[in-house]
Amino acid sequence: MSDTDFAPDHDVPIEYMRRTREYYQTLGFGAPYRWAHHADVPFARPAKKLAASTVALISTAAPYQPDKGDQGPGAIYNAAAKFYTVYSGETARDHDTRISHIAYDRKHTEARDPNTWFPLPLMRTLAGEGRFKLAPRFHGAPTNRSHRVTSDVDAPEIYERCRQDRVDAALLVPT
Image 1 (spheres, rainbow, N blue to C red):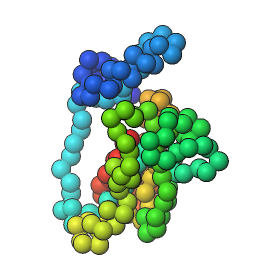
Image 2: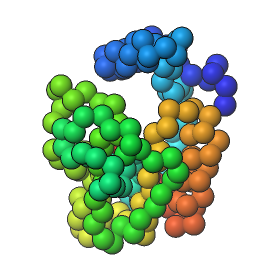
Image 3: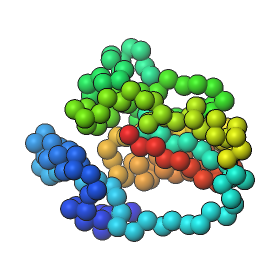
Image 4: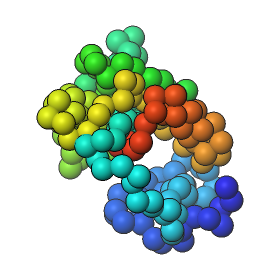
């Protein structure tokens, strides 16, 4: 994937993205952070109705690591809680995931509802109602700020895990 595939730098839907780009530049990187988003997105009509589809959850939430400092709702940015490789977990049980490793707008967001970053319990409920089949595993996508690693390493790994689970569709919940 080349940089020419990305949408123009000014094409950002949310104002905090501009502030984040400027913040990265002030950290001394020499240039503002370039968000990986594309002008064209290849959507495809699903082959099956949702009720007959197996759906996977893909989240950027991090597994809670008690030895890595405050990771609770409203915690300050905590780089120690980041993770750098794809992880997976069983969807049949609960998991403690957090988002303190993400740079989000803590001034206007309290981050108290875990369904906003890891809606697995809700997905189990909806699957139990027959709205779709829930994949046996969910997957955690690292947020290491590298377009190359995300495209060349993490995305193919998640794709392979979804393929192994015979997933028809995925719900990506970025934080």
